[in-house]
Length: 182
Image (cartoon, rainbow, N blue to C red):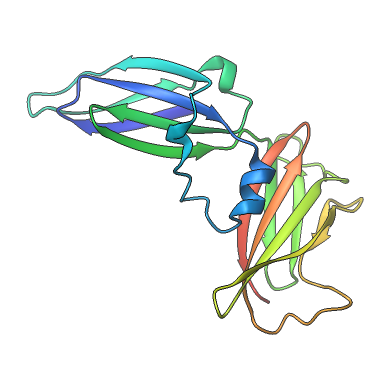
Protein backbone atom coordinates (compact mmCIF):
# COMPACT_ATOMS: atom_id res chain seq x y z
CA UNK A 1 0.00 0.00 0.00
CA UNK A 2 1.23 3.42 -1.02
CA UNK A 3 0.12 6.65 0.65
CA UNK A 4 0.30 10.04 -1.05
CA UNK A 5 0.47 13.35 0.84
CA UNK A 6 0.06 16.90 -0.45
CA UNK A 7 1.17 19.63 1.94
CA UNK A 8 2.32 23.20 2.39
CA UNK A 9 4.82 24.64 4.91
CA UNK A 10 5.32 21.29 6.62
CA UNK A 11 8.75 19.70 7.14
CA UNK A 12 7.78 16.49 8.93
CA UNK A 13 4.68 14.47 9.74
CA UNK A 14 3.95 11.69 12.17
CA UNK A 15 1.94 8.79 10.75
CA UNK A 16 -0.09 6.75 13.25
CA UNK A 17 -1.66 3.39 12.44
CA UNK A 18 -4.65 2.12 14.40
CA UNK A 19 -5.69 -1.46 13.72
CA UNK A 20 -9.47 -1.64 13.24
CA UNK A 21 -12.05 -4.31 13.93
CA UNK A 22 -13.98 -3.68 10.73
CA UNK A 23 -17.06 -5.72 11.63
CA UNK A 24 -17.43 -4.02 15.01
CA UNK A 25 -17.00 -0.53 13.54
CA UNK A 26 -19.37 -1.32 10.67
CA UNK A 27 -22.03 -2.68 13.02
CA UNK A 28 -21.81 0.44 15.21
CA UNK A 29 -22.03 2.89 12.27
CA UNK A 30 -22.72 1.16 8.96
CA UNK A 31 -22.90 4.39 6.95
CA UNK A 32 -19.99 6.17 8.58
CA UNK A 33 -16.77 5.17 6.81
CA UNK A 34 -15.89 8.86 6.71
CA UNK A 35 -16.55 9.51 10.41
CA UNK A 36 -13.83 7.41 12.00
CA UNK A 37 -12.83 9.94 14.63
CA UNK A 38 -12.43 8.82 18.19
CA UNK A 39 -9.26 6.87 17.51
CA UNK A 40 -7.16 9.63 19.04
CA UNK A 41 -8.08 8.24 22.48
CA UNK A 42 -6.38 4.94 21.61
CA UNK A 43 -2.63 4.47 21.40
CA UNK A 44 -1.58 3.76 17.83
CA UNK A 45 -0.31 0.26 17.06
CA UNK A 46 2.57 1.75 15.02
CA UNK A 47 3.92 5.28 14.55
CA UNK A 48 6.37 6.40 11.89
CA UNK A 49 8.02 9.73 11.14
CA UNK A 50 8.15 10.98 7.56
CA UNK A 51 10.47 13.81 6.48
CA UNK A 52 9.12 16.02 3.69
CA UNK A 53 10.70 18.16 0.96
CA UNK A 54 9.13 21.45 -0.16
CA UNK A 55 9.58 23.70 -3.19
CA UNK A 56 10.39 27.43 -2.99
CA UNK A 57 6.70 28.18 -2.23
CA UNK A 58 6.70 25.74 0.68
CA UNK A 59 4.51 23.22 -1.19
CA UNK A 60 5.15 19.60 -1.94
CA UNK A 61 3.83 16.09 -2.28
CA UNK A 62 5.28 12.84 -1.05
CA UNK A 63 4.53 9.16 -1.53
CA UNK A 64 5.51 6.62 1.11
CA UNK A 65 4.96 2.94 1.79
CA UNK A 66 2.56 2.02 4.56
CA UNK A 67 4.30 0.54 7.59
CA UNK A 68 5.22 -3.07 6.63
CA UNK A 69 3.71 -4.60 9.79
CA UNK A 70 0.35 -2.91 9.03
CA UNK A 71 0.20 -3.59 5.30
CA UNK A 72 -2.13 -6.60 5.42
CA UNK A 73 -4.35 -5.23 8.17
CA UNK A 74 -7.37 -2.95 8.22
CA UNK A 75 -6.06 0.27 9.71
CA UNK A 76 -6.97 3.87 10.22
CA UNK A 77 -3.99 5.89 8.97
CA UNK A 78 -3.67 9.24 10.75
CA UNK A 79 -1.22 11.90 9.54
CA UNK A 80 -0.30 14.49 12.18
CA UNK A 81 1.49 17.76 11.38
CA UNK A 82 1.74 20.17 14.31
CA UNK A 83 -1.79 20.57 15.70
CA UNK A 84 -3.50 19.29 12.54
CA UNK A 85 -4.50 15.68 11.95
CA UNK A 86 -6.18 13.96 9.01
CA UNK A 87 -7.21 10.33 8.93
CA UNK A 88 -8.17 7.84 6.25
CA UNK A 89 -9.18 4.19 6.59
CA UNK A 90 -7.09 1.65 4.69
CA UNK A 91 -8.75 -1.70 4.04
CA UNK A 92 -6.22 -4.37 3.10
CA UNK A 93 -7.99 -6.66 0.68
CA UNK A 94 -7.63 -8.62 -2.52
CA UNK A 95 -11.35 -8.71 -3.26
CA UNK A 96 -13.02 -7.46 -6.40
CA UNK A 97 -16.60 -6.57 -5.47
CA UNK A 98 -19.24 -5.65 -8.02
CA UNK A 99 -22.51 -4.27 -6.72
CA UNK A 100 -25.35 -5.00 -9.14
CA UNK A 101 -27.93 -2.52 -7.83
CA UNK A 102 -30.56 -3.46 -10.42
CA UNK A 103 -30.61 -7.04 -9.09
CA UNK A 104 -29.74 -6.29 -5.46
CA UNK A 105 -26.68 -8.53 -5.59
CA UNK A 106 -22.99 -8.36 -4.84
CA UNK A 107 -20.54 -10.48 -6.81
CA UNK A 108 -17.26 -11.23 -5.03
CA UNK A 109 -14.19 -12.43 -6.92
CA UNK A 110 -10.45 -12.60 -6.29
CA UNK A 111 -8.94 -9.45 -7.80
CA UNK A 112 -5.88 -11.37 -9.06
CA UNK A 113 -7.38 -14.58 -10.47
CA UNK A 114 -10.92 -13.33 -11.20
CA UNK A 115 -12.31 -16.51 -9.56
CA UNK A 116 -15.54 -16.37 -7.59
CA UNK A 117 -15.09 -16.47 -3.81
CA UNK A 118 -17.84 -18.58 -2.22
CA UNK A 119 -18.56 -18.60 1.53
CA UNK A 120 -17.58 -14.94 2.00
CA UNK A 121 -19.47 -13.30 4.89
CA UNK A 122 -21.77 -10.40 3.94
CA UNK A 123 -23.50 -8.13 6.49
CA UNK A 124 -26.09 -5.58 5.38
CA UNK A 125 -27.65 -2.56 7.05
CA UNK A 126 -30.40 -0.38 5.62
CA UNK A 127 -30.94 3.36 6.01
CA UNK A 128 -34.62 4.26 5.88
CA UNK A 129 -36.07 7.45 4.42
CA UNK A 130 -36.65 8.81 7.94
CA UNK A 131 -32.88 8.55 8.54
CA UNK A 132 -33.03 5.59 10.91
CA UNK A 133 -30.67 2.66 10.38
CA UNK A 134 -31.45 -0.99 10.99
CA UNK A 135 -29.76 -4.35 10.48
CA UNK A 136 -31.16 -5.83 7.25
CA UNK A 137 -29.61 -9.27 6.78
CA UNK A 138 -26.40 -11.26 6.68
CA UNK A 139 -25.17 -14.48 5.12
CA UNK A 140 -22.55 -15.95 2.82
CA UNK A 141 -21.85 -15.77 -0.90
CA UNK A 142 -22.94 -18.82 -2.90
CA UNK A 143 -20.72 -21.03 -5.08
CA UNK A 144 -20.74 -18.35 -7.80
CA UNK A 145 -19.53 -15.72 -5.28
CA UNK A 146 -22.94 -13.99 -5.29
CA UNK A 147 -25.11 -12.75 -2.45
CA UNK A 148 -28.59 -11.22 -2.65
CA UNK A 149 -28.41 -8.32 -0.19
CA UNK A 150 -32.01 -7.11 -0.69
CA UNK A 151 -34.53 -9.97 -0.60
CA UNK A 152 -36.05 -11.07 2.66
CA UNK A 153 -38.97 -13.42 2.91
CA UNK A 154 -40.56 -11.70 5.89
CA UNK A 155 -39.99 -7.97 5.32
CA UNK A 156 -40.83 -5.40 2.66
CA UNK A 157 -38.11 -3.11 1.32
CA UNK A 158 -40.52 -0.15 1.24
CA UNK A 159 -39.01 2.84 2.98
CA UNK A 160 -35.42 1.72 2.45
CA UNK A 161 -33.31 4.44 0.88
CA UNK A 162 -29.84 2.93 0.87
CA UNK A 163 -27.90 -0.19 1.84
CA UNK A 164 -24.46 -0.39 3.40
CA UNK A 165 -22.78 -3.73 2.73
CA UNK A 166 -19.76 -5.24 4.49
CA UNK A 167 -17.98 -8.02 2.59
CA UNK A 168 -15.59 -9.82 4.97
CA UNK A 169 -13.23 -12.62 4.00
CA UNK A 170 -10.82 -14.13 6.53
CA UNK A 171 -8.00 -14.53 4.02
CA UNK A 172 -8.84 -11.82 1.50
CA UNK A 173 -9.74 -8.84 3.73
CA UNK A 174 -12.77 -6.54 3.91
CA UNK A 175 -14.64 -4.11 1.68
CA UNK A 176 -17.57 -1.81 2.43
CA UNK A 177 -19.90 -0.74 -0.38
CA UNK A 178 -23.09 1.27 -0.47
CA UNK A 179 -26.01 0.81 -2.85
CA UNK A 180 -29.34 2.44 -3.53
CA UNK A 181 -32.51 0.39 -3.21
CA UNK A 182 -33.35 -1.34 -6.53
